[in-house]
Image (cartoon, rainbow, N blue to C red; front, side, top):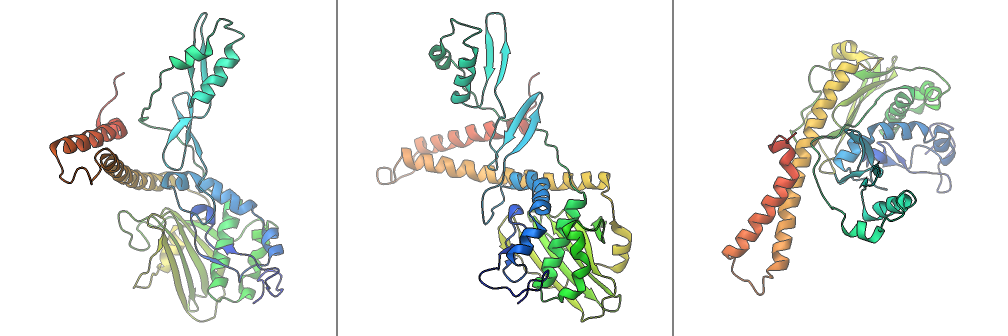
Length: 366
């Protein structure tokens, strides 16, 4: 097996594991039969890092499982406060906020440690400040914010380069001839300005997905009659791209696909062949990102993520309440489920439920 870039033979010394779908977005499809270490390094992490960075808000909100590492925190806004959102859904202040008055100072911090640091810094302005007393009297609160604004961008040359590399990797992985895609390598390396990498805006879904499915999809199609060889890429359902590998294809017909559900963390098999009508490829491909359509897709995706997150939270509340019940009333001492146990379980579930979902159940007082 040779590296498809430099054509040197791959050995144990120079082979490298290449994620066809990026590890950073939960990709599990990978191969050691694509690139050597030098070429993988030359292609660089820059373009893949850029794609991972732009998709990180979605990765974070879904708390996507990866082979290596955890999703990165993302920064959002609630009013005039910077908020850090962790992959498990927890939120905290991105920094400490201090409102100084003539005699008093109001501090908002994400932890006692941060609050203590702020108090130590205020000691000069307030020499009589008793830090221990202030910490003792500090109000500890936990609240669920009704909304947090997160900025998200998608697109640009580096994104197209990374998507093109993904398409080439999948083609080679499926046994494709490296000679057919040689003309794309300068674009991936940044030596050429443009190639046939398109945003795709079909009016209907390319294939069926369930209400709770969020998928990564790669579809390789070779059509000698139309002389087309392309890869359709779908990330998190709504980031849809088409990469034309060759417009003079005269090889064998190809239709191979790979589908990975990032919610259930499993490969999905489809019994039927997935086809994209040629007229749809002509009509719905665009060189430029269409902002209105991108926003529509993000609304669809974020609504689905919200539904999944709500379902997960309800499951967490139930599981936690049962664990607390079992700890308070060990089964060996309480073989019969009593009214007292029922009240305890009901109270714990209802308290956590209201605390978690009050923002969607009730309007907040102004």
